[in-house]
Structure formats: C-alpha cells, structure tokens
Image (tube, rainbow, N blue to C red; front, side):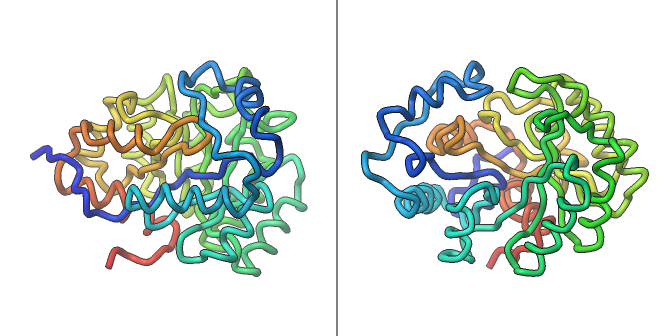
Amino acid sequence: MNMPRPLDLPVIDTLIGFRDTHQMGVASLKTAWKTHPAEYMFKEIPDEIGEGDDRLSSISETLGQMDAHNIRVGVIHMSDDRASEAVRRHPDRFAAIRPIDPNKGMDAVRLVQREFDEGVIKGVSFFPSGQNPPVPINDKRAYPIYAKCIELDLPIFINVGMPGPRVPMMPQWVGHLDEVAYDFPELKVVMRHGAEPDEALAVKLLLKWPNLYYSTSAFAPKYWPEAIVKFANSRGSDKVIYAGYFPMGLELTRIFAEMDQVPFKDEVWPKFLYDNAAKVLGLPPRA
C-alpha cells in the first residue's frame, strides 16, 4: 500500500553541503551562482545566509536545516576546509566522502588510503565527465581506485547519465557500469544524478548486479524517474537511496514538501530514507 512519508523517520542525506559565503562576498553570491556550470537547470537561486558569515556559520546553517527535516547524518564532499571542520566538530552528524580524479593515478589511490587511515572518509565519489580530461566510468585509469575501494570496503558514488554542465555525456553513460560490475563484483557503486535518459537501463543493471545502488541526488522529487519509483516499490526496495542537493541547487523545504507526494509503499520509506544508506556507508542502524 502506498503511504505518505512517516514524519518521524530519521534520514541520511547522501548529498548535502555548505554555502560558499566564506570564500566570497555575499553580494557576489548570486552572481557566482549564475555562472555555475549547471545553473540553467535550476530555476531557484539559493539564498544567502547573511553578510559576515564564516565557515562555522555555514556549517551551523546546514545543521539547522538538517535538524528541521530530521536528517540524522549528512554526507559531504571533502572538497574544502569546511568539510574537515564539520567532521571534526560533529562526527555523529556528517560522513565525508572523497572526490577523486583517476587522472592522478596512484596519488589518488594514496589519498584515499591516507584519509581512510585517518578515519576521515566513509566513501569516494567520481564525476566522470567532470574530470580534465574526462574519464569514462569503465576507463582503466579508474580501476586502481575501484580496487582500493574494495580493499577498504568503501562505496563509490558515481555520476551517471546526462551531466548538468555542458561537458560530454558518454564518459558517464550508465551502460559502462555493466563492465565495471563484471570486473569488480565486490565494488559497492551508488549511481548519482539521474541516469537520464537511460533510467530503464539503470533499473536493468540494478536488478542484475547485487552491489549496485541508485540515489536521487540533484533532482526535485516531482522529477524522480517513474521507472525508479516503480522499481523501489517492487524488487528494488533495498537498492534506492535518498540524496538531496542542498544548497547547490535545491532547498530542503522544497525537497521534503515534494517528497510527501511520492507514492512509495509504506515498507519502502525507512529503507529509502535511512536503512539502505546506512548499510552502504557502514553507519549505525536506526535506533
């Protein structure tokens, strides 16, 4: 039976971040957003949080947003000093993942190992079309990173499908995952950013490979693919994971308001919002 989202369920948001006010004047923030490589895809420009805010206030703002929407853990990128500060100050609220560039060869592998040894990261992320030069999902330059993720039991979050920025799509064609999953059956891969226009192929691959997952990042709930919602309600309740896009392009108020209209079955909601992500990332189960 399809049920409204239970409001008391805790949430793991597998893509959340911080506003950039510590790096630029607040007056220039909206101008900077308009030059974002995918700004044409988002109608609502994120609001500022006030003049004079530093990295701690941007962390506090994200924590406040998380509390307001019952987000117990937010997954953040180790992309600047705010991420390391957030994990240091709030280790129970943030889980960090390391964005990786396979063009850097063994230096990238050593970085993953070092941050894992330091207890900093819970996973890795990879934007195939966003590298310079782009690195396809099945490119052998990425294979040492995949092997290291298996060795350390870390998941890797991979952008799939049509990229928002105006860069080539084919490096992150979802079909490339078939080869990677065949070569690395132990690798835990979480698809990110939609898999458009091949959502049906994504579902076929999710059915085929046990360690392949799908997350809803960067899409407002009213645009979540029908094929994915149907899959979650049938054979894929253990394979679909919630991810937002705050504050990069979507406000949490919009995400959660629209989420209440998604026709998930009642038994899907706790898995989608928390359990599946906890399993993949090695986080504590729901209390």
